[in-house]
Image (cartoon, rainbow, N blue to C red):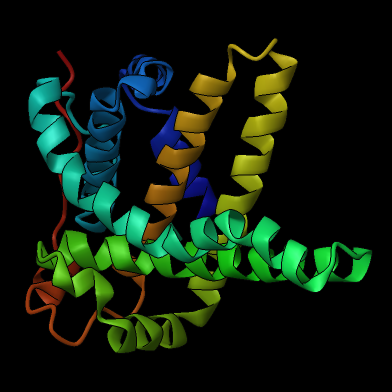
Length: 227
């Protein structure tokens, strides 16, 4: 699974050019517009992987269209990270109320870490469900998401661990590249993470209400034409 995801990310015609374009969006993400555009493109990566279209990177259309496609995944991401954000916001008031001891600080750090890992674990299947159903509410059907994780436990755990490792590697590599490279490496890590999530779904047990799962699994995608 890792080999196929890395191959999709780095190999193929125009892969580096595509990643560089994503890096520019990451660099300009402070404008919000390009952050949404990058999110829209990453959803295309997820959809393409689910459908087996991994010979070439998805196309970069107009940034306006990518912005529209990125609205829902950004909203889903914000909702799942809301508990983490609240934990950060209320950390200092809690420490002030119970006393700023080392033990309390360690407990809050552990709680925040657990919340972060749970948010990340649920976010992948939630975005997958959004991609499959194209319904915002589907991304928050926790019972179906937990069932999906349970049914595909090994693949989900592998994708989760590899995604975390790729983000750590991206951060370290970005620092070694004098900080500027973090935009390229972080987008590549995000691309790889979405590809891994797509492979988990394509090769695993689909959602119960995914009527097109059997058809999608049997699709044979022809290789791209070479000019």
